[in-house]
Length: 200
Image (cartoon, rainbow, N blue to C red; front, side, top):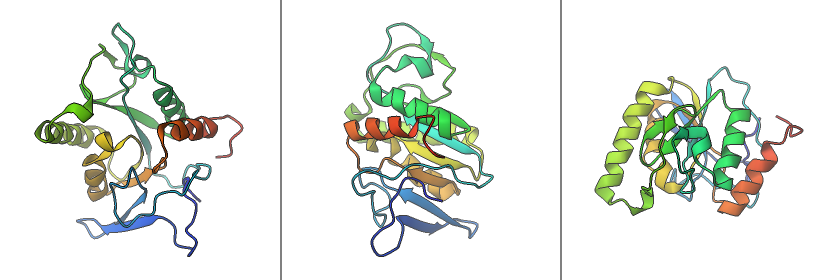
């Protein structure tokens, strides 16, 4: 079963294993802009088609927010209007059991939570402010995400850095299907995977 990552030429898939505190081996598949882990090969060119694993793990998708937003308070899933967010939402709704939005202003958002629009680009925060955001996101994730769940991260470096490290160390099976694709490539790939006739 593959997760959108073509096997390397030497036959070794892009998987990095770590030992969790309880001794169990955990793995991270893929890479986001090369941030984690350094030993994982990012997908080359276009990733293969995505397939759900056959494990009994709960599948959770984390989707980054977007700058383009509606002007009035609305459910978080409808607040962001960018093409990338809409494509990520459709992917999450198809492949995950539950999904959440990584918001620069509100932290971990349930899609149905009503929130007001805001302007707080994460890439404009200082190092200290970003670390505070990561710490708050970790605490929210600890209270929300079930243990031993599979987490599909659809987010840029600014949103994934730090959080992915913590998820891995907590024992989640973390999947990073977008690799180093650029925004246009991400939108195209996500739309393709969300098609009803796409094999799962």
